[in-house]
Length: 144
Image (cartoon, rainbow, N blue to C red; front, side, top):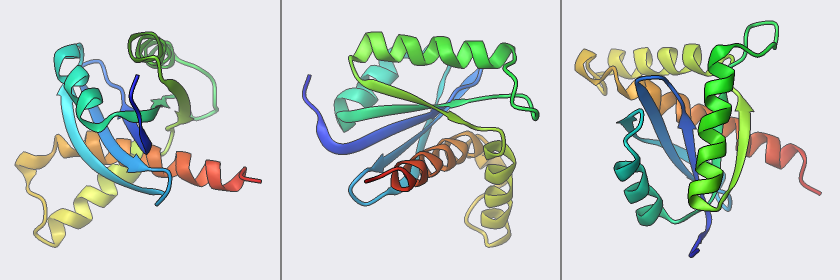
């Protein structure tokens, strides 16, 4: 498949809504992109076609003590489906703190007039952005 060197799509997987962020390895910059309904493979196909990412990242929801839970298995299954469907490398990132961080970021944006209550679905896309930023930081920490 064709890849756009450096592009990475990240996902905050949920049973109803999936947050999506786009980033680039070269700049290590991520931004919230969109949300989509769980199971909306046609829209996901379009995102893959439009952005041509070389890599995919999925948040792995763990219990506070780091153990796996039911949603962990669902996120792993989603990651496996992405890997098979799009023939891309897929990494899982511990997302234990991303939802709270995304909610705080969204609240800050609301306080400054940049986001409104009706934009609350954007929290899932912000969570995907934070997942991707964590992945970039981990890559940088382990770079030679």
